[in-house]
Image (cartoon, rainbow, N blue to C red; front, top):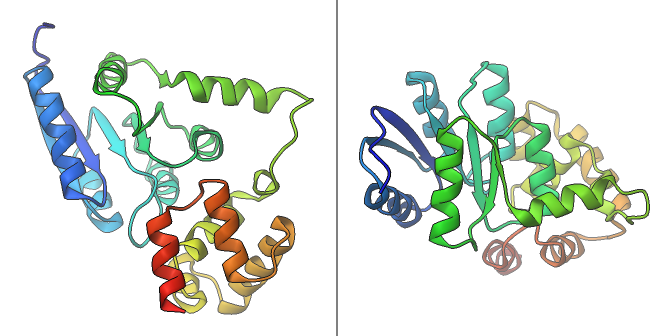
Length: 227
């Protein structure tokens, strides 16, 4: 077993307490000398990040309120240089590439096994970067001129953020407040997004997001049931 790491602090950001506790249990069983913080929401995460410096942040893309990608933008704005490992069930090709553009140091699917998760954490605590084999392949494919892009690949980062929030069931007026935009501007984004994706309704937009693993079945079911 590796020798303990002294005074390493890890922040786990995930909406689900059972997931956060699962990460902590796995890592504590792996080695000593690790201290943990937890956040389940966007504001909690920002508070923890401004309170201290973290040796590693483990972040889920899907969060209540505002998304993990938006949190990455916030980290850049406050010049937080803590390495970030994205751990999510969402599509590696779409979210992984956008996360890398925002400066994350690692990306791992939650479908990975415990051994790969520990390996990713160990590599990143050593100051290196970690990308899964699937994401590496996606990056290579994305750079190849013969690869046909999906319609959502052509969305700007702001359009993609709006798509995420619409697919999560956020009303336009609330989304406007979140993003400091007018409802009219958000509606314009929505119209532009639907045109680019080739859909004509919110249900069509949700179906597109499900097909491309841009939202979860749980979120989609909740939205449809509210209609």
